[in-house]
Image (cartoon, rainbow, N blue to C red; front, top):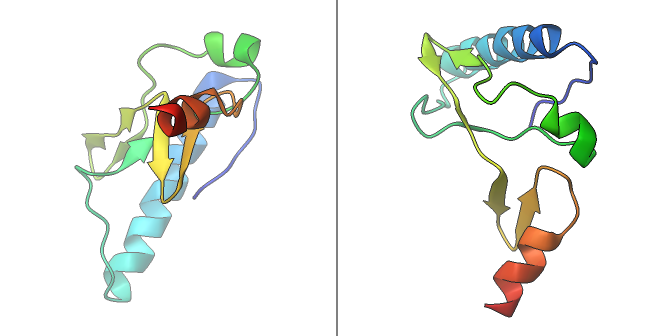
Length: 94
């Protein structure tokens, strides 16, 4: 998990792309690997701030655009972009 906070979306996505590149380089050098096509991007924050983000953020890894998701299922927990637990509760109820 990579975290970074900024009020400027361009700075945010630029940093995340840079940091992702560093992580990939380290992984490639130390044997584990990261699958560019399976990597997902989840931004989180209060609803108002998340709504201000561009709908198509430009976070890339090795030239591949990373897919932005609104929620993500980590083992046993469903996390959404506002960290409100709504996605997890909906998942548990169904």
